[in-house]
Image (cartoon, rainbow, N blue to C red; front, side, top):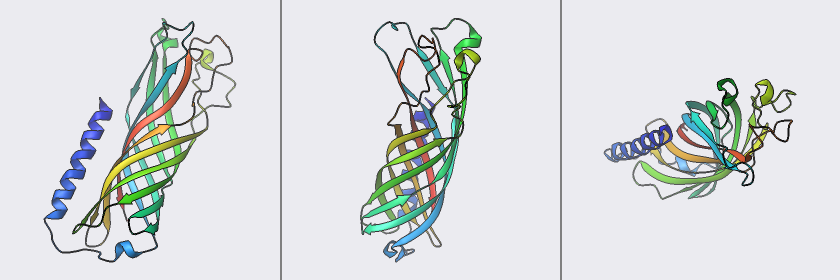
Length: 233
């Protein structure tokens, strides 16, 4: 539900920003998009949970639910102009969020709940495909891939879930797609965007026991999330 709220907020901000910008017919920063290279930064919110696929045999009763809280994003932008409507963007940043996993097939409360607080170094390379500029507004779509370094993974921890430690892989790869709008203001360009981020690899570090009640039923566990970013360039 929170992820849909974030999507709604992002869509509302994109629409309201576009309508506001169209009210002013003075063209701000008319030569901004002619630059070969420019820089900026972004701030934002995220709502991440996990896509979980289960092994089909012997685990019919396994069920894991995910409760996520909103986190924050902050990072830098390097934008390379490849074509008048295509840019390649490098957007390294930090992402922080937390999740609660409930293993409903485990009866004891102490064993059935795992709290996961995560901080990632997020390194995306994203192609930005823009329309032609319309007054002080320019819509665009995004598509790309990213690498995430999970500072909180516990991958090398000898303890596993039997000792209360839920472990995840440290090195992960994602793909992401999104939409946004450039709004040209007097001193800078403001760009709200909303994007979906999806894991390509299995992020679960399996327990030491092959029959672990926590990890054995899981075939794939990967991040899926929504980012709402506000870029200043």
